[in-house]
Length: 449
Ligand code: SF4
Image 1 (cartoon, protein in one colour):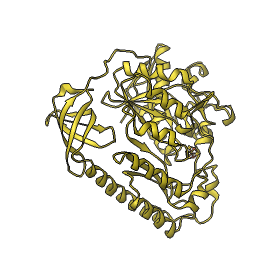
Image 2 (cartoon, helix red, strand yellow):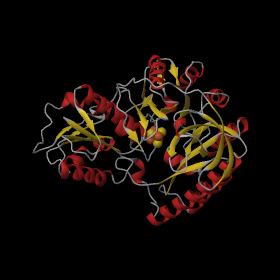
Image 3 (spheres, protein in one colour):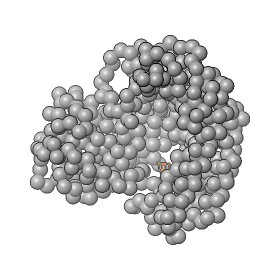
Image 4 (cartoon, protein in one colour):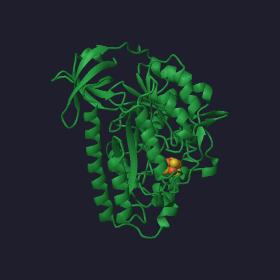
């Protein structure tokens, strides 16, 4: 059977699609690119996307156009939370919840189209297993994503993820290093540790700091990034290791969500603005070149102009490098949906746009501060016409530099010369040894673009 996959949402979802795809291959099926003729389409959905149903409908329609008999299965967070809504979409044959995501082949006896869609969705309390998965980035063999944690025990008032993905659970500690070595043998030089609430990693007596120590004391050569970590879980111990490490990238992504402690309280976040501020200053004092990305939500119910200005001014002076700005949208089954004083949509949009402009400014300041320094970049994309590579430094500066095509996968030291508003123009200084690629592959690289 030819199977196509389509993924919506976060990097974790991509890595999970990758695992599902490898199960199909191991069972003798072949994976085709989405858009090609297929006998089966599996869509891995997201609940963060407001238009997840519209998107799913579009994907299904496109597939059924050229493969009218294709069996359509839908899984992922949206499937877990709104199974009936998905089952009512024209063309859907089966809906699989979070628990059923990795047992689609065992759950379905035959991949024939059905009159009435089947729904296989367990309750949230039954989602207890940790399923391994990792994925690789599109059109380069640079970066791999390794999921070591899933689910969340926090109950932020705007978030549906704990409902969709269940409680926090983690990869067995003794598996982590061997998985990393496998990825390394596949030729990847950068590994991103991912999770829903990564800093909450917990397996037997081991915590996230133990994972960091394990990697730091190992002989693996890849460089590592921590995808995102809650500010209350980024401890001094973790900072001490990462900020003086040659393995870990000097790059953190730390959700803030609001620069008003009052709004943070309504969001049920587990820190105050002061804590966040101290944390950022501690990081920058130890290593001023560290790149810090920040998630912010604007337009949360009750966010007055004053609250928003507080957030804006807080971020304006905080030495962070870029912002990921999210416009608040009401999610079913979350406490915040019932909160008073919803912010008008037009105001949410204006605030989003102001913070996005601020983000550009912060990025420019950070990039400019790096000029004159030497950093290591893993070449990602090559412009054949111009003979130029681009990629990211360990502290997440996007650089361009002239070098031959043969440089693929070779971490290179570059001198950061000038900034053109998009990339930092650099010159190559030296090339480091690269991980050798052996074809170790139980996993199908589902590509993230
Ligand atoms: S920490 Fe909060 S925002 Fe993040 S996944 Fe958990 S509940 Fe959602």
